[in-house]
Structures are given as structure tokens and as C-alpha cells.
Length: 101
Ligand SMILES: [Zn+2]
Image 1 (tube, rainbow, N blue to C red):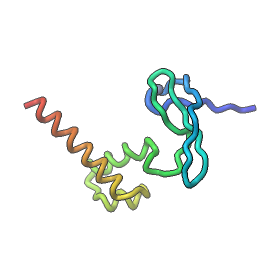
Image 2: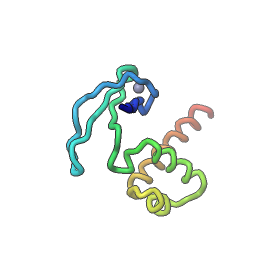
Image 3: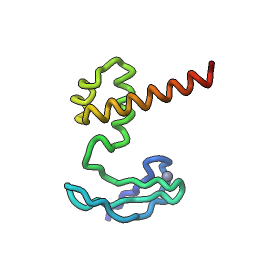
């Protein structure tokens, strides 16, 4: 029987335990918790905006000059998700500017 190891989405540790369920419109989803860093996550997300790769793709597309509506259309996430991620990056850049100068 083939088994798949579930790794932590934050630190890639194999010490992951089952930690309850999420109840959403698409059904009951298993929650997992990392024993090393305490990160709580799902193995499979039904909404694409919660997937960890989407956040990095949003940042890369913002750096390449794509608009918010274009990004939300291509990645199939809401405009609010893209603008929220853009605001996070802008505020992060302001803090680094303030620390440097
Ligand atoms: Zn972890």
C-alpha cells in the first residue's frame, strides 16, 4: 500500500498530527498541526486563495507589473485577496525603508 507523507506547509517537518476538522460548504476537511512549529493547516484546500503557492504568485505578478484585476482573473482568486496581499507588501516595504533611513 502506498502512503503519502504530509509535510508542514511552513517548515517542511514530518511531525504532523491530526487536529480536528473544518466544516465548510464543500464538506468536512481534516485539519493538521505541526508538532515542531505549531502551524495549523489543511492538507487539501478547496478555495484557491488559501493555497500557499498563490500568495507567492500574486507577489511575483505584482512585481512584473500586472494589475489587480488581471491577477485575480488569471489565478482565479478574488480582487480583495490580491489587493490585501499588495497592501501587506507595501506596508512591509515601508517598514524596511524606515529602518534603513
Ligand atoms: Zn512546521
